[in-house]
Length: 330
Ligand code: CP
Ligand code: NVA
Image 1 (cartoon, rainbow, N blue to C red):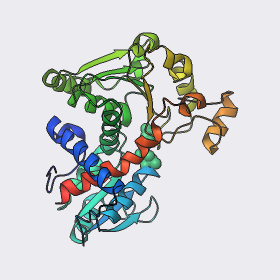
Image 2: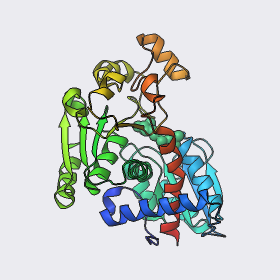
Image 3: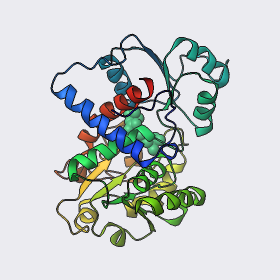
Image 4: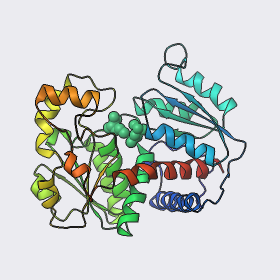
């Protein structure tokens, strides 16, 4: 197993390619143990705190189940329940929680908040999503891709949609680190920030990865092994941006016609979830009716197709988060 004892897990750029691969290996090992019913209470007696300033299904449940499987206690602090930000600074919170807990997960807004939490905390801090990065999601995505294709190096990975937010950024870093061929496909204004691209290009030089930024979906998806997308409007963004996003990103929707343009039957569809693939959600229904659409970033047809591996990807969140917790706590 990989040992990252005492390290924070804030963004993938802080880790070497070998360390990231080690986490993917460890997640696979823990997944196999769980499937075989082999007990792995490796962190018996430890306790962790989960701070969520934004809502969650997968990440929260993954941290909780992972903690229970590892023999740990968990405290969940929801977006309204704690004093954080309102009556107590993040630095004070860090010092209080790290005196009681063995690890702290944080989901919230700016990356600088989780970085501050880590700075003032004596125990490992795990990023459960910020506006800029979502690193635990990427470990799960890499595991899922490797399960599917048997390798990561050389995989043609295409991200459709808003590539300058947490998912686009983190996937670009993950692909660069693992020697994959990353394409972001969207209008120019949605490309990741120049500084982050430059940093990833440096990484890519060492790993053999390639990075491409392409506005034309037909060109972008040719030969793609993985087509990935995320919501067009992320948590914490104002409702007013929906109209602009729909106008800008509709040509980048993942639909059956686009999936066919890869020229490969083996292409898979991935999404971090939750997804607006139908009108069966409050926001999906409201925006669908307002803008006369039956889906947003992905059609229901693709989402429900045999090419879609989104639910295995979601399951892998738990195994990956367990690997991150155990690697940093043991
Ligand atoms: N993919 C993901 O992070 O999902 P949740 O928002 O449900 O945690
Ligand atoms: N970009 C999305 C990812 C959710 C897992 C958001 O931040 O809402």
